[in-house]
Image (cartoon, rainbow, N blue to C red; front, side):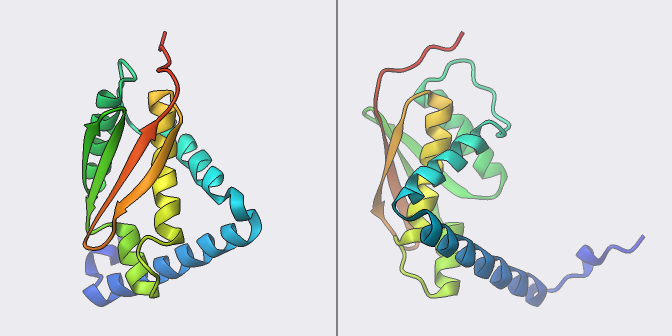
Length: 159
C-alpha cells in the first residue's frame, strides 16, 4: 500500500492551500456575478442545508444548546471558534479564521465578500437548528474575526 499522504512536505500543503484559496476565490466571484444581490440568500440556504448534515445532538432548539453543539462540531474540525449568547442573539469569535487566511492568500480585503458569505453561511446553520431566521453583522476583522447573529421571530417548538 502506497501512503503518499504520509510523505507530504510543508511545501506540498502550502501548494494545496494556495490551490484551494484560488478555487474558493473563483467560486465566490462566480456566485456574485450570477446571483448578484441574492448572494446572502444563497449563502444562508447553503448553511441551512449544511445544518441538516452536521453531527449534532439537540434535544431542544434553544440558542444556548445549538450554539454549544455548533461550536463543538467546528472545533472538531480544528477551527478556533468561541460562541457566546448575548441577548436574543450570539457572538462568534474566530482566531486564525480559515476564510481570513484565504483572503490574505488572495490579497482580498478582510470583511469583504468572502467574509460576508461565510457569516451568512453560519447564519443559515444557526437559523436552521434554532428554528428562527438569523441576520449576521460583522463586528471586527483581523487576526481575530468577530461577528454577531441576531435572531428574529418567535422560537419554534420541536415535537
